[in-house]
Length: 460
Image 1: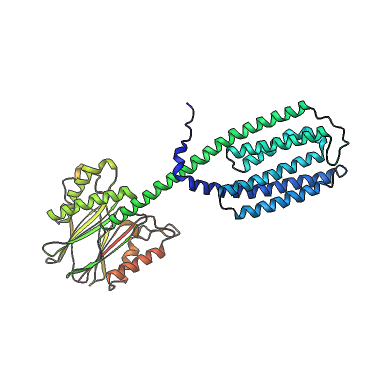
Image 2: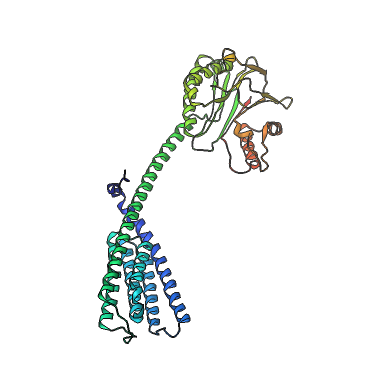
């Protein structure tokens, strides 16, 4: 099966942009073409003068001056051209000057006529491939070189070589037709290659524009996803029994960290923080499903152990095939009893800071990640409890906080966090969060590798 041809209809919506891009490319290539031509042409002529001074014709210096003058003019016009048509005209002007200079060289040195077909074919290839011509441009260059070659042949027939009319040289009609055939073959090759390259340029441009359009659409969708995801992030607030500060530092547009808190009908405070394995859209989608299920479970029962057991079964039923799991810590502050009930499914140890003794208690993990589903523990409710009093503080966080690493790959860790908590016991939760994030940022080497969710609860 042959390759599918480029569908030119796909280029129609981008014709204007393609023309602008093509003009910039031709202008860039024309600068290169002029400079290369001057360097190659003048260098080879100068070497000819040095190596074979006796054969050198002084009139060739005129050619150097003219080709340099035309190059300067073309570069000047090229700098000021703004359209594709102007860029093509400038390229055509220099191509005419280049071929004319080479034709004049053969007028001066007719003894090298046998090199003519190869020289003009080389010029044709050089011109057609340095400048990204379209098909009419390639034909123009092919005809231009054939005319230059023909002009030299006619000059030989009329024996009017400018400097050396007395040179004994026989240039037959057969030699001319053979050379013209050679140039025709070179033109066909140039046409075939440039046609393929032009189609490839158009297809690549269309693919780039289509990819840009898809990227723009994805950016818009991600922005919408980010806005939706933000609605799931609770705001810092204050109740009659607690001050709550929320800080969220995502590493991507949307992420898999999640937290919530609710004041129950009895005036107690329920809270939950979780971290879904992975980042990006898939994690954010799971966060949305978890959010809805948590809201539903809270209305039924706010005891952390039972709620997380139900949430574990929900994740196993609906998301086991996704191989995405959650670490979650949930708690309930019973203000009447002064007891914190908590349940931790595979989440990093959370902190209860006891203000009176300036002591840190860790709410350690009690079982596996949500969604893994070990038969031996599916029926068990995991729940612990600790006593609390006024001015105590609960610090809830995701692993992005304590797993930040310095230049030596050392983790920030739970011990540093505990020390920080003890040193900043009287700061307002919002100030505490800001200072903690600043310390972690100063400790970390490089960009963050994971989201950070920080929720601090001060008991009044």
